[in-house]
Length: 351
Image (tube, rainbow, N blue to C red; front, top):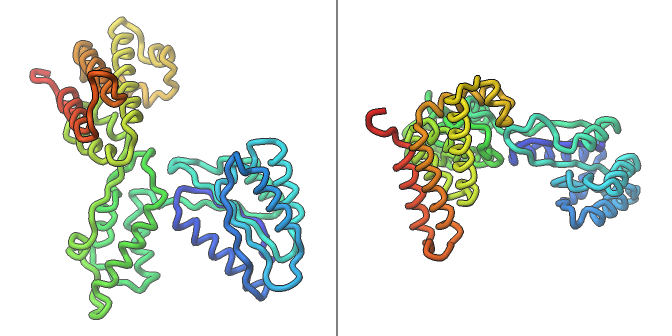
């Protein structure tokens, strides 16, 4: 018997959808007829009504035809309040034969497990399963591409999987990168490449990838702030270029401001004779690795350079907010961000 409860968590949209589809088909095969799939998205405003519908549909026995497969996205909204959480727990206990429910939680790429643990634990306690749907790690993307190609009977010439992985962002390993749609995008690119040799059956080559697949390296805020702090201007400009298209300008300002302030404060404490562990504790930095990284970065700057960078960020903030005298359009603001990085991330002559 297949348990009628499933909890999926992870950052990969395609893998999560495949798990749901396999679960749906397995249940249908066991019951002898397909289930009626009911997709619903929960949010705090509709949590009570969603729970009420779940209670009604899951507890109603199947009389004719297939039962209901409820696929609930963003399930964390259902357990934020005690009353809705308790009703969800009861609904799982009262699932009638022929019905089933899947909770699908989209997590950040660096998540270690389900967010609403109590709900996931309740699914396990009721005999259900909790499974991860995580995007391939950057270093494993080429191997994932090769497995996908084999399942499609698509031949890849040597080096092709690696070339495709790199064009889709395998080199960006920062933990804050959004990889929810990485495998879905990759799957689409494999479909496109397969058409290239659909008639002649020849292997897909590195040249095919270079000719048909556009580079779509994801942006990383961490990559930007580290490149600025380490004064690697070329890398900082590259990271900034990717982020400006997807990240709100106030977010970029906030992370850049925070890093410059951290470098100023830590550099000042160390210059005053404080030991690094004591200085880090005073700043609320608990990670030894992060403290050592910041200390290394701070040594690349003088106090005057950091003060100038901070001062220019204030002007950039005024421009983003559109304060009187600082009005600018999107192109001008983009140029201002670029000039800030050029002016401050580059190592000053003589350093």
